[in-house]
Length: 327
Ligand code: NDP
Image 1: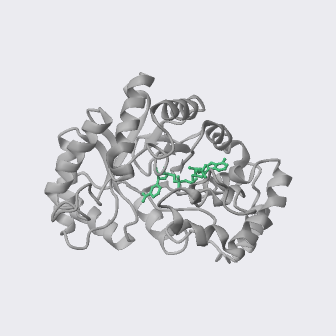
Image 2: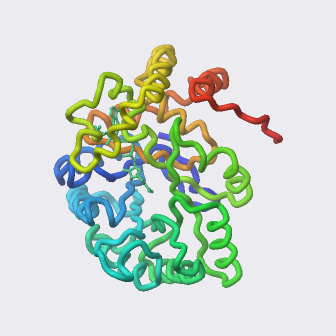
């Protein structure tokens, strides 16, 4: 496993990490979570991602129980959680980054995770109704109280992040250091194009999500929706049209010869491709069973096999034209 600095911070994260969205509680109980987290950790993963909204808080409970059983040294791993959507349908408790919600939110997450602190705390989405200054102060206080060590954003516009950073600098507060954007061969907008200048200038970290586009880039949807896959789960029917889209399926089929040439699984090619982007600090992988963890964690070995020529072939499959780099 290779480790990368989280942006310009001193902390290093394994370039492949592990997250619990969809899977913990819904597809994996504590026993299975222990098995998958142990497998990731043995491969060298040191970062485990969660969010209060995952399975309505139960994903954090499962991870908390798993961590208790795993008995790892606390300093040997990082845990993150994210706050925004909330757990209760009530004014001030849904879709907000107000001070009350953030402080009550972190207290709830720590109790469910059975931890004294999380290493990273994210604002899961931007909140256009709360002044960014209020959010920055609350996140700063949470860090000062030792309940989180670093904070970041998820799916914020570059302009919102720049505003948060400049408020923090103006008041000498802890600034956000990392963004959590979606990034895979289909979804590139946050880490390519306009954002590149932002990442270069601010040295912001990036912990990226859905590297396999919810499993689609593993190639397993080529013959329809497998019964034991995410798209077949109750409540995830919104994935169905995406998993049956002929154009998208053809793109994945066109990747198959490349994976064959590199002697790897399609999922490993898709993960290794994400790692080629120098702005990525860690690719957060997901899995519903331990075999997937073993396969995915070996993707680091493929990175060096992906030559510039292969990158160009992949871009061509996805219809992406890169502009010349100016430095
Ligand atoms: P992926 O796109 O990699 O999808 C993971 C799913 O794909 C697995 O649960 C499994 O589903 C399937 N899969 C994984 N590996 C393989 C394999 N080798 N072969 C075949 N199928 C495989 O990642 P996620 O969408 O799960 O996102 C990763 C993490 O990112 C999340 O756990 C979460 O921590 C974070 N995230 C953050 C978000 C944010 O807003 N900040 C949003 C979403 C995720 P199955 O077997 O059930 O088909």
